[in-house]
Length: 219
Image (cartoon, rainbow, N blue to C red; front, side):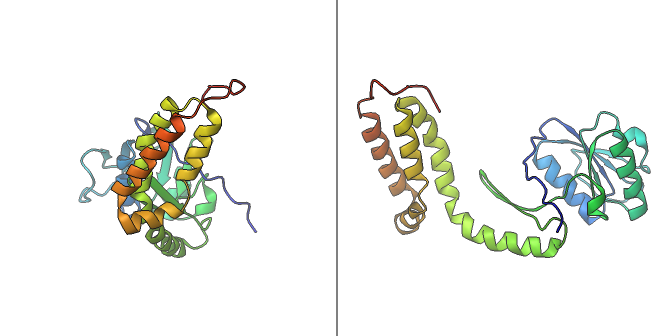
């Protein structure tokens, strides 16, 4: 069994990312990278391809010079071109993904679903991309109802850190808010009811006296 990779979410905002090949896979990569805030350089010699105008389009074959100043590379052209892209990128120690030979690069791309602040990524380590998408869709259907809770959590967490001086009480309150039972409350009564209850819990916790033996520092 192959060693599993290390999952990570990259902050690509303002970083230059190269996509070689603008077929279906390459076009999807361009769109996803642009939505992540990357500066995308899209290389393909075919002049009649449609791609987002916000990327830097190069209507020419791949050239190693395209790697100058690039942070990450996606090879989505023919297998022959992809092998060359991978070789050139790895020689420069630039992370690269190959759409045709997943094991030849440094990373694989999972099946991704996003809703608000939630990002779900499912990978089969390149073994079954179609199955990854199926699993993603099944998991997304279960996770989507939690989106309003995540947004409420994000809005109230700064108040918890500001208003509750006890680190123990902060952790306890945040743990109570992370109870999956709130999904049932949300489904039955709506997010306004959850917010009202959480605000009451916050006020009650903030009103508790802090022990002299407890540090007021944030966790």
